Image (spheres, rainbow, N blue to C red):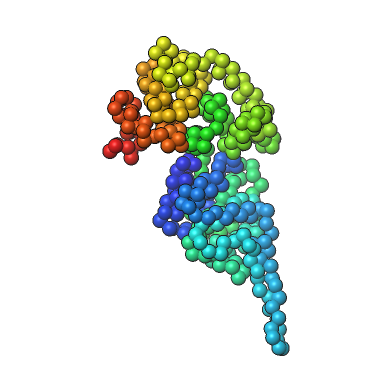
Length: 341
């Protein structure tokens, strides 16, 4: 599955109240945890994120506390569960790094997943139990998952997908230059380097985005090689046409560039600088006149995600339907919900 498909699948489990345990497999840094958090936020339910690799069995089972009977007799002990486990409401109990936990810890988790209880604790109704882990081929320090535990899960594999990353990045807003660079060098979105602690991944590029906004170098997040390529790419921005003039409707004399790296910078730049439906329409009118159809379509898809974040997509669609029929036809094909608009 792509990250977008995983989000849709997990959201479907919540919407249909299917409390089936799910195990999410994927390489480190591709956003498994953030997808689960986004699903919980979208559904308006709680999220309890438990990193099993950082816990001991008693941290999950709880501590035995002696109970002394009144009068004669042998005392007993009662397990006091940890405070982080949910007691009510509705939400997702997310057991992250499940297969990085030692076998003793996985055994306690197995009881929680199998019986929805451990010690004296019972998972409340309305709570989903999901887990995530890395694969052996990701060179992560993982333990083999016991077959009885594995058989209790739905298993979903999530793969790195640039379109999913770009859609998410456009909705939350990351620096224009970084988005253009990754659009041009998609292979650097996720490139594991087992010999170094810092390497490019969707997670580390998000960290790099925050460093950029603070005016700091990004090497510490994505590694020296990727950071050096990014800095070299910034030279492209000295050759860009007047993007602000284009989105203000003054691009008649400007031609679409021929060099590939510059095309990515122009397309992403037009999207991220279009802060109103009118300016977005000007950008796409220019693209429709000047650029090959595949670049106009690429720009339209990204523009829709960007305008959704700004709350301008509805106004844009109304204007596009009247004044830009070739773009509106494509919009209706890529967004089925708009076909009846």
